[in-house]
Length: 483
Image (cartoon, rainbow, N blue to C red; front, side):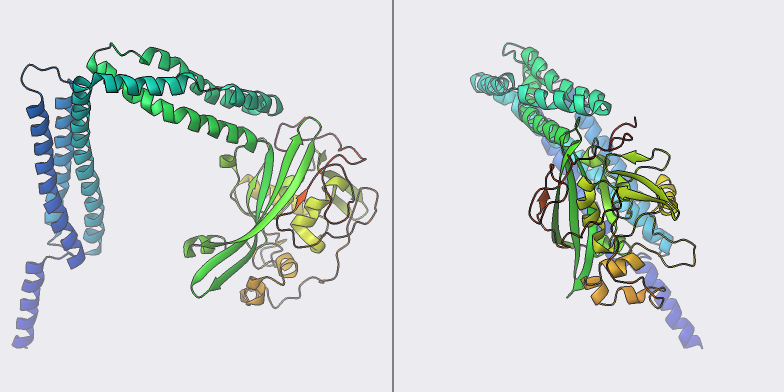
């Protein structure tokens, strides 16, 4: 018994001597302490170099001493974290490990910020010397940057923005603001180009002109692209999922509707499908959403404003029952209830979203979708909590629509709690049109296809889109304001 107690006592002493934190964390602490010492020496060296370059009485920037003080303050903050880490080394509980890791991150950020601040002072000092020793070179660089800004033609982007503001009035204030910032750059350049200003002002102006000469064309290009985004609606449909030899992949079909003429509601529909390697985390994030639109953007919005809450494909193009209709279709009513009807010129969208598995969307189903979207939740089409979902990876519609997918073929649907229940018939679904006329299904494979406006029922390979014989009923403009 005594020998066992002795072994335990020795073990406790060894643990105390080694520190309570895991060895890997203690090694990180030791390494960071060495870097702190090195950072202090770097800051001393930068400050010494600056002082030696500028002899007593020489003109210098009044900001430099303050910036060196700021660098030392950041380093002091890093050393404060080091003191607390030293105390934590004697403790080995889980909370101490987590606290130590957070402190290490804080210490590292403060140390790096301190060194960057000091490096910035030395860089400014060297720039100052360059201006004093070679003013002609500095003036030439300023002239070059000024000329690039002064000669930059904003008229193409102004024309694009003017058209977008007319077509999408809700974006006018934002587009005006972005265009105004480009005009401001050109106006400021006129006052910044002064080669006879004091050195401190000269350096600041030269840096500003250099930056603005790069920013102006880039932001003009971005504004042109953002204006163009307003003319597109798109959906990213998750068509398949696959894991092979540890490689995670997803198959996305992008259905894009481009407005050729907003006033006349003329559009072109195109689609593209591709496989993409994804991380395991990204794969798991969409694992429940096979067959769903995992991204949707309305026309009249920027791509950055897209919805990322998964939703059944095509539902975003349906008008609310209270509105009754939009340019894509309208609510029909018969003894069986109310159901959504796509106009002939938009049947291609119905085929791209549903294929030959289409069943009319009934009003109760749309209401369930609308209520879920309103609170940022995905709608999977379950009529009751115990009933099988209709959409998503374990949905009955998905099992039928994507029966040939790698996911379903590999047994993905079989893992569902609803897999043993009978799925809907896989026979051809009836297609509905405004006058009760039947329309055939489009081919399921649509990689790289484009469908234009001007035809209601074209053969394969022809253009498809708006401009049909029947005008869209009045109602909500897609992506815009309700009228």
